[in-house]
Amino acid sequence: HRLVDLVCAMAPPMSSLSPMPVMDARMRLIIQAATLISVIQAWVVFMHQRVVRCAVRPLIRYGPLFLREQERIQNLNYIYNCNDSEALWMLRMKRAPFARLVETFRSRRLLQESINTSVEEQVAMFLHVVGHNQRFRVIHNTFRRSMETISRYFKQVLFAIGELRGEMIRRPSGQTPPKIRGSPRWYPYFKDCIGAI
Image (tube, rainbow, N blue to C red; front, side, top):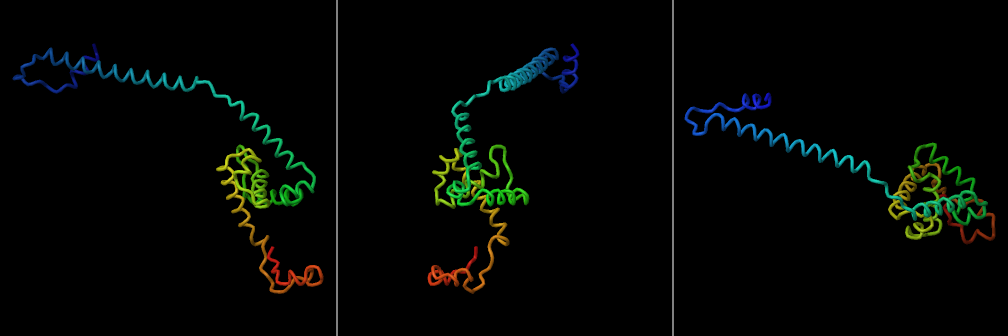
């Protein structure tokens, strides 16, 4: 009854010349207000059911991804825990320099671990691409990562190495290094070597 009084109070005053009696206008406003309230209530119930349905929806379990994740972890453990000759064959770098390079990137915050990828894996993917002249499609099978992920981390590691250019790359001196000049095996062939790296 209060709702009817409220709706009638908000209704514009009816002129005395109106062909519709006052009671019919009041009834029309009541019906319109009830319809509006019903629509709002139906919308609220619909949205509530939608939220509840999304919250109760069971998660999809990906069985093959779990096996793929195990294979990826085994592969990474093999790369990280192999001997120096295997590491040199796979990464073109022994284990100690690899660990120092990773620690340099991590301590200077040039590379950061993500939820799924460690700094070691990022650097290992980069070294595989550069050291073996491999395409992302081949690395994709080795590291069990998508090509987009490999491309993204390759660019990040490349940028991080570029930030270390002052320490890793030195300007050429213009002179033949003494190690090359003193060796009959290397001198005639590498006399113009600039020794940049």
